[in-house]
Length: 109
Length: 161
Image: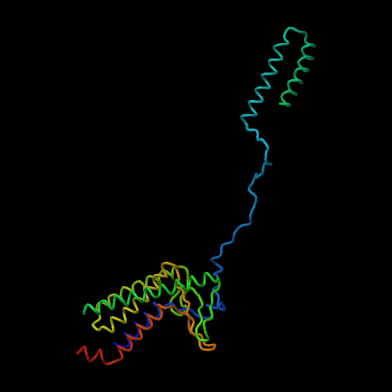
C-alpha cells in the first residue's frame, strides 16, 4: 500500500513540476529542429507579363483608341464630301493635302 | 474540519499560486529589460531564464500533440488532487495537497498562458548544477516531501485505529 502511494507521489512530482536542465539553460544543449518538418520555399520569380510602367506615362485604354479611330474616319469622310464636284485629280491632290494637315493636327493635339 | 483549518488551506493555495506568479513575472520582466538570459547573484545562486515545454527534468519536451497530451494529464492530476484534498482526514495531508495544488496550478497557468513553463532559479555548488526550477516546483516538492514524511511516520497508523 505504501509503495503504491509513493509511486503515485513520484508520478505527481514528475508531471506537475517543470524543472529544466542546466545545460539547456546555458545553451550547451540546443533543441535541433526536425528536418522533416522544414518546408522548402521556392525561389522568388517575376510573375508572367509583369511590366512596370514608367511614372507619368498615360496609358491609352481600348475605349480611347476606338474613339480616336472613329474621329479619324469622320474627318476623312468630311473631307471627301466637301470636295465633291471637283475633278478627280484635284480631289486626290486636295484630299491628300488636307489629309496630311488633319493627321498632323491630330498628332499635335 | 474547523473553519480556521479551512481558511489556512485556502490561503496556502492562494499564497503558493500568487507568490509563484509574482516571482515569474519579476524574473521575465528583468530578463526582458536587461536583454540577457542569465544573472549571477552569488557563488551558490544564479538566475537563468529557460522555457520548459515538457515535464520535470526537461523530459518529453515537444511542441506538437504530446504537449497537449501532457497538459491533459496534468489537468486530470489537478482534479485528482482536489479530490484528495477534500477527502483526506488529517490536516497535514490537506496542507500538503494544498501546497502541491497551489504550485501545480502556477505551472499549469503558464502552460496555457505562455505555452511553456519559465524556470529561472539555478542552485549550484562549485561546478555541480541542479536542474533549473521555479517557485512552483519548490511548493510541489515541499508538499510531496511532507506527504512522504507523514506516511512514513506512525502518526497516521496510530490515529486511524
